[in-house]
Length: 354
Image 1 (cartoon, rainbow, N blue to C red):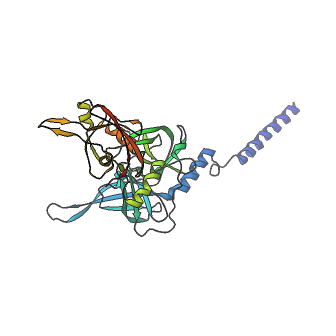
Image 2 (image 1 turned 60 degrees about the horizontal axis):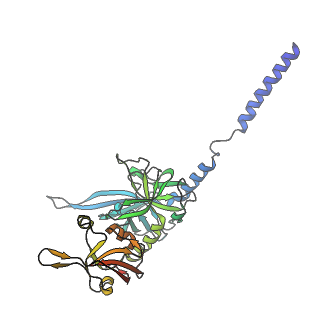
Image 3 (image 1 turned 60 degrees about the vertical axis):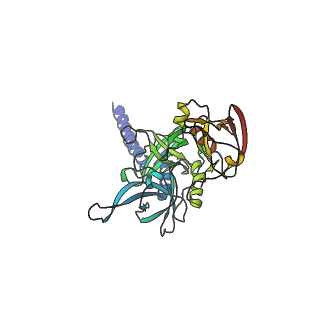
């Protein structure tokens, strides 16, 4: 009996000291993190100093006093492109603004001016006036390496809540969205990372903290995040931003033609894009392409109808744009047309848009 009592006491003591030993060796939450949490924290810590808050103001004259007032126009996000004070954001964040203010992550505010605009890509480049030293730029990734399911992180200022982080995955690739100019932006990244009004222009990052996209739009009946956000791929940004810095716009290669509208093409069941007219001195005119001609008061005789650009079929203006935007100024392209029922082929060198 005594032996049983002693054994019970010893077992209780062992449990007692074992509990405190286990409690003493339990991990400290402040110093513990899963690998994924550690990665998220590290990416945010490194990238957040590069993210900025962009606000735009329009000037309006009062009706009766004629005094000029500053009216808040919009707000969004952006990120530092380089340490000279260049900032990248969305075109729709700064469109029609008379005054721009950029707020850094440390809450310092700077006036900014527009360097270049690309409404057809919904991108804009700003320059800080009297930029501070020590600006941190984001490393650039490669959007062609993305795959569905990969982790992504979005940093921005949704609803004015500065430096907000959301995490998600790549939901789909190769989406198309409409730009402010009405042109389609192709190759867009779809993500379920929460993107809300105010996130526009902010960076979408991969697990290495590299820029892989610029958050630009959401699909939502309510106007708030519904888990379907879109980002312009960084490979598009790589191509467009240097042109905006150097020229203030995208250098679009052109043929020098006026095209029939898609509505007219559909109504008349034309298979291709008719040339309405060519402009003297531009590639199409030099190559011998011709536009439509009016015969009599109401009759129109079509000239060349574009059917292919470098072998890519053209059935609408969007098809034409899609084929042309793969080329740069100075490229030689092959244009196939139909004229009076006969197929023709033209090799032309693209020139710069004016």
